[in-house]
Image 1 (cartoon, rainbow, N blue to C red):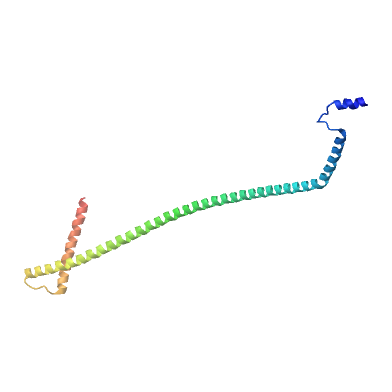
Image 2: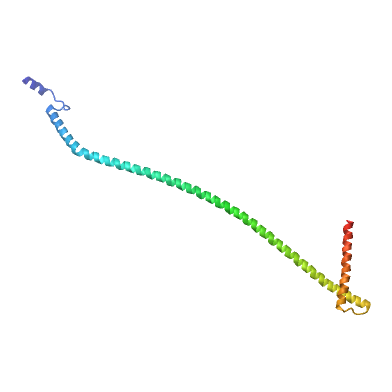
Length: 188
């Protein structure tokens, strides 16, 4: 055996291969530490990992719920915006219709006022014409009476007689003017 010991002493040991007793002791120590860690530390690690996973899942669910709520709010906002645009268009249309109606009413009122003014003007002209005719009749009568008085040589100051004479004279003039007008129309 000496020969084996000397041979073993001569063979250099491989540093990568540990001696068997060290290997056995190392494996036993490894399993003891592994068992202690598996019983004490592993449940705590799994518990922390489960809590963290649940928190992450909860936050993801909250984020999805918030995103769904944001989508709903956006859809509501767009619907309200569309309603507001429709309402604005409707109000604009109503305002245009009311404006057109108001313009038509104002034109009708202006037309009515114009006709009233024209009618009042015609009435005023007619009244002025009658007053001028009356004044002219009186002036013509006075001149005719004065002239007749000078021709006859006596005064025709009697008012009743003067009025009758003037009226008869003017009626004859008007009748002659009317007959001349009918002859002129017949000649056309």
